[in-house]
Length: 158
Image 1 (cartoon, rainbow, N blue to C red):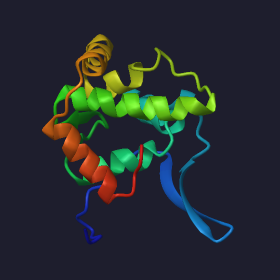
Image 2 (cartoon, helix red, strand yellow):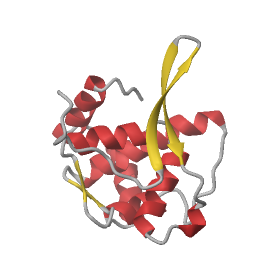
Image 3 (cartoon, helix red, strand yellow):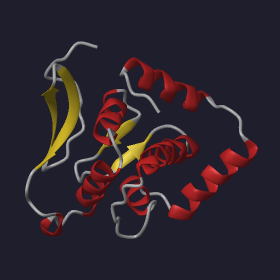
Image 4 (cartoon, rainbow, N blue to C red):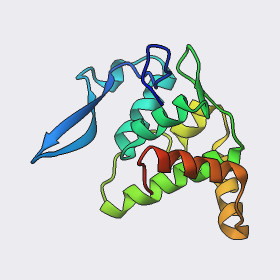
């Protein structure tokens, strides 16, 4: 995909993507402006900050999904997931499992699913139940396959 002025990107006030040159290798990271989270009044921006601080590469994952119209970001910074809810729940479960291997814990107000549920307008209990059902009963869906293809094309691995 060619970069142009019309290409959609994730927009989070106070968070910018950066490339860091470390020993000849370019590392993707985010820069969080020093404007304490407690001064942010928009609940969706707070959720986006929590997600970006908690999950490694989450900015780039969400940005790739915005560019592919899987996620639609509204003017109030809330988001709409265009695929089935199970694929949303499984995406964040994969991100959660990968980052907990480091035993690095960041406190998120309301718990693990709170930011995701608030940002996408879902219920935490629904997302947890969908993950449980998917793990218990298994199976693949077209939506999950579509996500895997997008991640592969953007060099994102789980």
